[in-house]
Figure 1: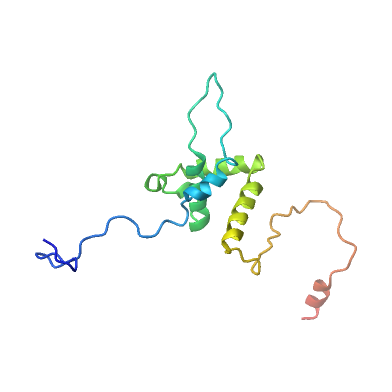
Figure 2 (figure 1 turned 45 degrees about the vertical axis):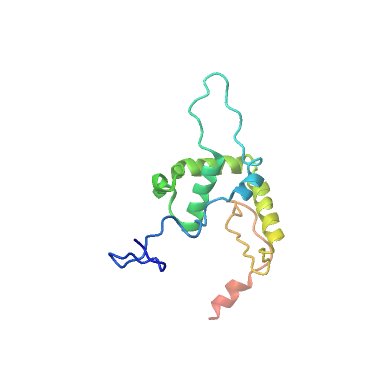
Length: 154
């Protein structure tokens, strides 16, 4: 019999709390999913020879967010413990969404929701140029580089 402080009369320890008190950061809330679901909907299945049923887009998105949040390699995602598809399935779905051009629209929805909540801070923005292709055999700029001259004198 527990007293009003939650202490067990026999063992003297508190009752164990079941469940998480804070949601996992890579889980997609129901409100956010209502806005993203129309964008990330699966294409219709073929009538004849439909193949294996696909994982839901929400599960795949949560797997993608897990990889982005934790930095875990795609092939090492603990999918059974998390209840998401395998890392390779999530990677393929991310590639599919990218090829279909759905990611910019989904990012726009996320930015809109963050702006509405007042949680979007554009004062800290990073521009990453590693995605710009460097073509082999492309013409070089005619402007001389100051970096090579300065490096020669140091």
